[in-house]
Length: 99
Image (tube, rainbow, N blue to C red; front, side, top):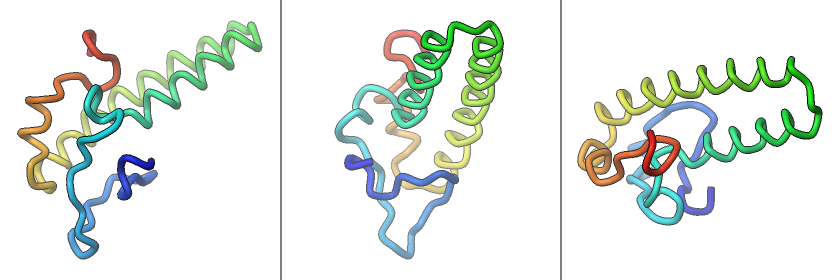
């Protein structure tokens, strides 16, 4: 969040507040580092609770986040200047070298 002052729970572009593209910090490696943090936290819960139900929840949560990144990328490409070029420079959404 310190690398992106416009970090938010919802996808919104705020031109009235001078919304600019965040490319520093973890955004140099993946386009959605906040989601990476959430996935790591969920994975830790699966490990600590040692429950198959937690694993099921983790897989479902991961599927939802993957879908959300696709929708978020679409909206940001359409509305945030420079985002399309950023997607070409920072190819990975969640996991560097993989996806």
